[in-house]
Length: 174
Image 1 (cartoon, one colour):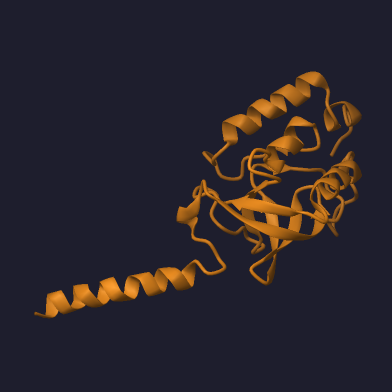
Image 2: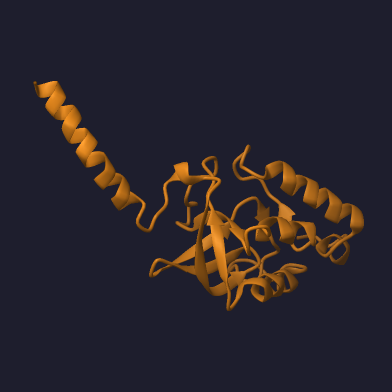
């Protein structure tokens, strides 16, 4: 009788726990699903934005890329940093975005920023767009993240075409 009771309680409690967990902070098992849309509060720099997720302002760090620095307190503004920041701001400010999480990367980084692929609409991923246009380079923090192959191909194409930072910063030490 006790094992059945425990199983029954588990079945009753599990949906309640899952519902509480998914109210504002997604779980890592929701990778590949677009969440949102969420209003963009502001663009921080080329690879970081702030959004309003269900009434909570959170910082989003884009997965799989790095843009030149513009706001790091311990580093100077890097070549093509202002351009990358302006491009991101122009694409997201005053709008809304959808977020896709990645099981391999996890939900947050060491600075407690939410890690995500950021979508401008159902077809346009901002992360890949910035790499393809030469505003960012592919950067692997966690090998095997979703979209890694596409990001690497986008960087290769941007380099070959001399797009953005690949021509503007040629020979400039970062």
